[in-house]
Image 1 (tube, rainbow, N blue to C red):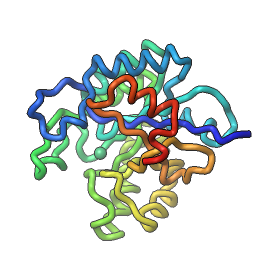
Image 2 (image 1 turned 30 degrees about the vertical axis):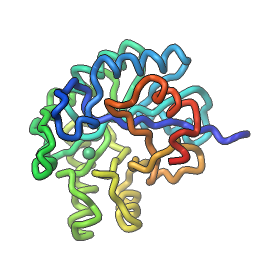
Image 3 (image 1 turned 120 degrees about the vertical axis):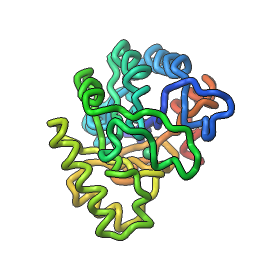
Length: 240
Ligand SMILES: [Zn+2]
């Protein structure tokens, strides 16, 4: 059986932003997002959350599938992405920062990155009621590699507990803030009971990929249709 490569798409904010926006690449316009999902659909792909993707990564199920992830929990994911995902019967995982529910991406303030509202508790409930998944993205969006092990453990473990308590769902999927991790962080995440952790390592995932270092494919406002297709269908990302 040849290796089956599965793209896991990484999105952040789905919103049109002015040209002057700092780190504009974090935003994909709703129009582009719609087009990308439509393209997946007509190519015969199904977009799946990390939990629904698991049997495919484990080689227990086969099919044309793509993982869809959103980092940070922006309100615009609920408003602009969820209806499109619903329309095509896709699911997705949104990684939530548990201490920042209903606030904004305050961890980006020092870098003057545009503040966007994050989903509130009731908005996350709405996201889940639409059949979407949530994953954990720590308590405060800390860079886990620069804080003490004790603090990192709290960020990883408490986020899971808080989200599971608040939303009464299992939170099995984790995402490293800023894509930063090391051996210690990786084992703490595994021991916390998560089933997977996504990184910012580029490439498509397959059966051989470490479940706690899953590579992803960044999609940003510069990802034009031909590039989007190359990222999904070819080894374009695997070589990066
Ligand atoms: Zn993040």
